[in-house]
Image (cartoon, rainbow, N blue to C red; front, side):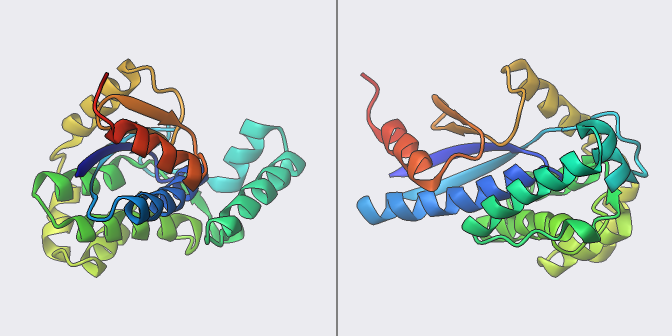
Length: 220
């Protein structure tokens, strides 16, 4: 059986990174019970902070202003780091200098999906973008950095530089964000399974697997 999952996320959302790892656990659980199940992921864009400038902004200052100070940010990071370790992710918040505008990163994913890149290549690109921001402290709003990341995942750096320097697919990505917002999505990650069942938040792999198996059943 084929299972389609739309994944709404943003690359500066740590819970989206965790949600991606938990989804992988869910997929393994489903395939253990239903061998041969195939999954089709469709990554949809979301902007946690749509007003972020194209140049980005200082990461720590942004968080402290948003959450009320350094102590609150430290507690938040501790909570996220603990959840990340349980999912096999080691966050490195201290190395993040810039909170980027993620439009260009979303454009990379939109391009890869629209060109029909292999699912494994898209998966590698999504993973690499999360790791770039949360583990390597790379600026995923920077054109050259993004082109180098995509090249690592098998694309052409020259083609990507030209693409990112243009405004190609910018309005299409923004339109998708508008459609997602129109569905009532107000937080990420957000999963739409088989176009009929939704799961909000970075739920556990067990819960996600249960939702997937529920959506696999014929409608009553």
